[in-house]
Image 1 (tube, helix red, strand yellow):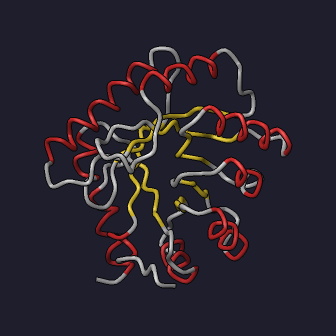
Image 2: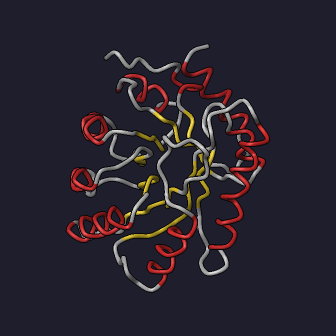
Length: 219
């Protein structure tokens, strides 16, 4: 199927309340523009250099999300325009985002990335670390940051019950945090597992290859 057909297929499978982040990492500007022209405005990238190059070439009303591991020394390059950083996995990173956002006199939305997968390769905070950062945020520790939700990546496995269990554990934490502050975003699910994520309460999904096709890592 074409990119347009893929996009419409995915959109038609999403409930109205579920936000689609079109993951455009490694895909060219031409492909992003194709999806943009269909009405998509939220795109996700992994790498800062790739994002900053694309951001200059594409319409300025795109809401860019960083969804990959973010190094603190790269925050300054995106602080002026980034809409949401979904991959906050340390207090050090949170402080750096707050500092750089202040320089631009803006508030940056972030999601705390919680490690729910059993795979060692996944980044993320423990639940207790998430609770501590959320508590600090409620007490005003990061004035130029809005913690608007949580993000998690399930184990890459064919075992849907394990995936479901991991997603549900993040939904429980999301509900726990929502007692103190209304959180907007529970970001769970990618091309392979987003239907399960939605069943478990996700209201934002990150879909790339199911829209753009398989990535070409050779370029």
